[in-house]
Amino acid sequence: MKRGMVSLFVALSKVLPDGCGIMRHAAFIALFAVFYGVGFPTVVSAQIRARSGAEEYFNRGNEQLKAGDLKSAAENYRKAAEVAPDNFQVHFNYAIVLRDLGRIDEAKAEFLRAIDLNPEHVFAHFHLGLMCVQNRDFPLAVEHLNFVVEKEPGEEVFFYLGSAYQGMSKTEEAMDCYLKTIAINPRNFGAWYNIGLIRFYDGDSAGALEAYRSALEIVPDQSMVYVNMGLAYMSDARTGEAERHFERAVELDPNNFYALFNYGDALIFNGRAEQAVGYLKKAFELNPSRLTPGNRLGEAYEQLGRREDAINQYLSVLEKSPSNSRASFNLYNLLNKLNLPPQLAVSATFSDASGDNRLGAEEDGFVVVSVKNTGKGEAHIIGIGLTPEGAFDGITVGSPQTIRRLKPGQTEKVEIHMHGQKDIQAGEARFSLNIQELHDFNPEIPTEIIVRTIGM
Image: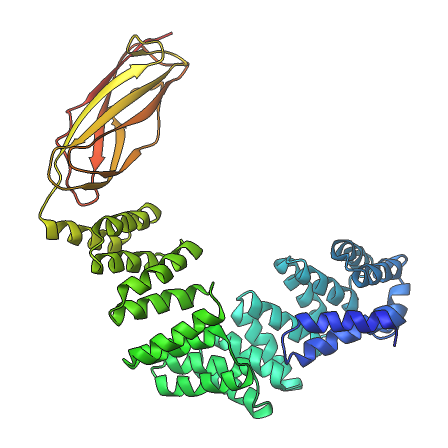
């Protein structure tokens, strides 16, 4: 065997999942064909030669695939498919390259075309099914992987079929596939791990823990396994065991979001909020779109009596998701405990670029809104906007503005932009001022804002 082929096959084997025998075998056959000119290229060469240029495109695609130039390979396979549209191997190779380029919809169409041409080709069904699992098209994955199971049942296909069923929440069918996987290979890590997940979500914490332990015997020191073991212990109220497993998960992967969050959560539950702060803060920084750690961090600050930090943390959550009910509720309760409501006073004025307090054509102006908190408590997330009263063409009004936090005695100003268009007419434009505080501590609002305009 040529040295280059050996090294390329080894490289491929490193990126393919453990236990993917069919995939490794398919990759080996493809490489063997590329290097030696046998295998699938020679199978179809007689058919391709019948169409001028198709074999040249096909072989050129193979060479580019061997060199790792997937884009050029895809283009040549496409040209070969145009010349030889009824050739299975051309469509199959094209599909594989499109998949590896991330052009999933096109790859799916080429796999289906290849299967139409050769309905009994197990590799084509398997590769399509596997791609569909990876891209969450679970019903199509089930259809094609079941075909493979009927023709060539084995460890890999049972595992991926189980994954497809699990993605469809068909846990009974998924469990059956995973048990068949283990019957063939009792040391399949993924099957044991997924059995643990299914058992946990079915309420069988003890069964889940047993499966996770089996997974760790095969591949030790997996952070996510320890995370899920911790969750199983938490569901059984074994909070000390849960905390130790979450801690181990963080030790194995200090940037594991789930490990950090659940460890922090368990520490709070076990009365160690101060220790939890650092882990929750890091979890929130790693994944700020996940707001639960942010809220839990605010609750930790509350337990520690760090009121200012708690308020700022809840406001950080609300800035990302203004409708987040947990942050809003926690902030409201925190302020209610103090029994110190805010009281807002509002004034608004108009000014324009020319200084004559009238808005003309192609001129910018601003409504300046001043909000003062004369109460004894804080106000939060104060939204301020303008709404036209009646019809008045020729003025563009800018976006609403927000005051994040207003402490007692503090005054903040915001500007809402206006622009006079070319067709502005002389007269008076009237606007309502809309102000909404997070917890409905809303001010008395001036009746209306009048902007005088100059026509062309």
